[in-house]
Image (cartoon, rainbow, N blue to C red; front, side):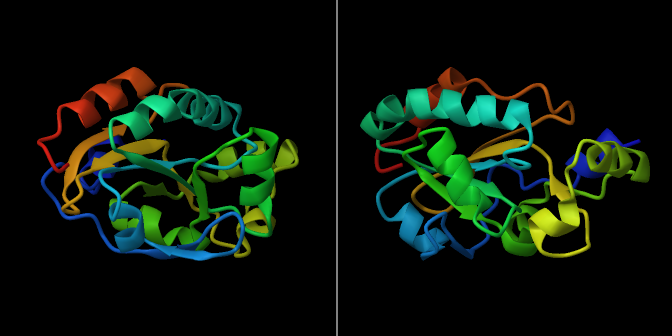
Length: 187
């Protein structure tokens, strides 16, 4: 079983600088954290993959909130450890108009402190449902990110962080939008 205190002790907290990253987007273009922050505050969402119905519901809800997020000056990026074109398939299948990055080897998720090594019983459950993490991620590690959302100011400092060990619960887009709107001028 996952230990809440142990896991959350490693999560990037508000006030910490966002770690830099350089990852391929769904279309295969490398994007850097610096490039994403150029236009203003950044909402960073980690999701387990398109196999996770709760993740896809969240990404669709964020798509619906995207015009308001943009109007408030924020950009949005979602990251998954899935490789092999799965980020693009998820983006197209759900009509997402924001960047979806392939977080190869969970590099960014590790830096944000949201990676877990699920118990063997959970991996077996996924395998029984046809979800082969090694094949999806391009490595045998089997690590997955916890569903997490971070709001990063234009200055690269984490302003808000939302994470829940219960993968069925996510931060509401309205709460993210409210946090974006409360950022000081210049984000």
